[in-house]
Length: 332
Length: 162
Image (cartoon, rainbow over all chains, first blue to last red; front, side, top):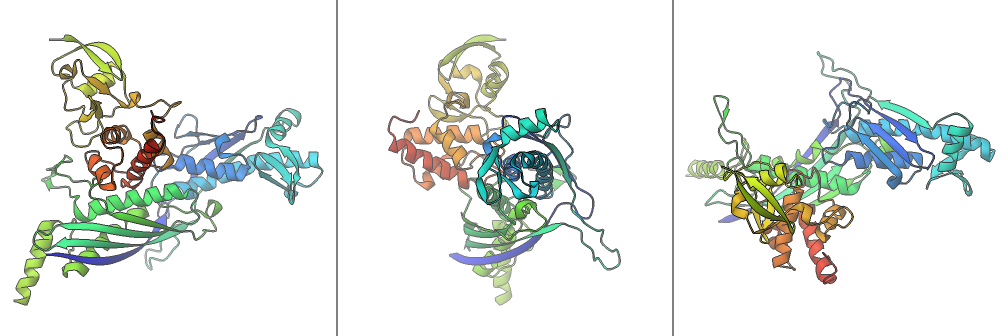
């Protein structure tokens, strides 16, 4: 018989390293043609950090995204970043890029202020222009300001920035402290169908609500959550490294089973944008948190469907059948 | 013992000397420098090395190059170019279907084989067609969406797609 059930799991997760320094850094230069280049050690593995960091630079500089060139992940040319780990790049390197862009913009604003006869604080940057706040028709093109700054004033519009979250070590006695700069929160709900004769679990649907602060790029956030859910489905139901005296016994995809397109449930992603005051434009992170609630939600859904608690992952058909039989014997 | 054979890749004839044991994926990547085709597991499980052989998707890591003489081989380089993307490639970009990108060449060719045979696939048809291509990044959601959107574009602009 096939039985359906629903399960919920919630989580919180920190952004960045626990207590230890984990800085990111960036250089920014604005060119005379109104384009800008960002140099950062941040490495894009496909999660989209290069896109997000370019968006942050574009927003801060008031230069179109298409006019930002990114130079990333090259230790010869770019300043230090600790790495694409700990769900930290948007929050930490994003702040570094924003600071570097702000420093370069400051030079542009000071030079433009002299031309426009106002104070630098009375100016904004946007759409490739520097204009008087509230009077967008009084503007200078950023390309022109960059040229004047560089060739007229001898002040090339460049900036550097770094960011390291303010943290403390944990008190060894009490465990108290502030080990992270920001935290994210999420809830996922899974609906499963369990075949009581075979023990096979099919995940039908997963709804995922994730707080990531301001979603700088909602499509990339969705992509991270959907990918995380697929890892969570694998972690919950299929993936198990079998070791025998340290030797991996299933080193192939035929016996270490990853989810395929046929194993994936219908997924609905909800992005909860609760701005983080210390994040770049309110952003936090989304990488690792995306997969955390998936397996527990599935395990809870299995319990809801057939009343057995699987306490060791993955929840293979063998484990579920064994648990079902033990429950039956307990009743008999 | 090496033998000279002619491989027809993306419509171009290439004369290469191969050992009888040389795999198609290695000849494509190392001899013809068509490195868009990826070699993942090397044992026909992950689908990263998918190319089209006479229009059908195959794992090029399981095929001897010598067996492909005189047959039509399509690799990702033959699908589109940066200046002139295939409808599927554009749909992958627009839908955010590429993350690390390692599975993308194989995914695209499996998808092309599907759409060549079935221009109006259901979501299940698409999932079936891509089941031999493993993706660790995306959860397949946006890939399935991209293929479905490309199918609609191609049927809407008959003959307009490449």
